[in-house]
Length: 219
Image (tube, rainbow, N blue to C red; front, side, top):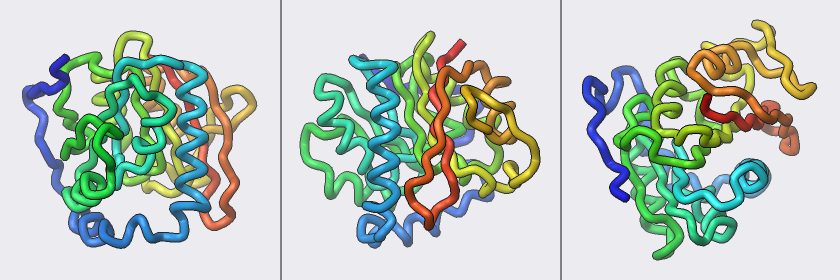
């Protein structure tokens, strides 16, 4: 299946994004101590949520994939799944391609989260891990994520609460399954056409903000 498309009227790279900072960070990104104590554990949590809700997806995309670590882990969890990584940073993607073994990921694509170059309903599972706080605003990215999510497809989103300017601490919460989710994320998520099916807090790394891991289905 050809997943690529050319969504009309979408800019490839919205102005104001600090892409150069991520390009510069890319060569040292995998050497960060946070990779093992935070990101690897969070990736396992995200993939566990995905495998419970969608055990045999045909196609999965990781939005904001960075150097591709989650996808390399996903290759063992979902050996028959077509795996795609998307990131706006060419430097991050160059690192991902250099350290990813053949067969671990089908494609790495450079694109902004608000202009994903895929056809509608292309993916059964969409993951987004610890990168949503970089979005200038959540609505446009979530609308685009919904567009490429299959009907009743699954989004697993791990969000660092209280970090983004659009998600200030203490600005209100929505409660789902006993978990307090910042209104700055929950409201645009629901408004964009998702329904939250599961929520949990991930707080295993004291060096990082408490992260909420949401599973949501496209309505």
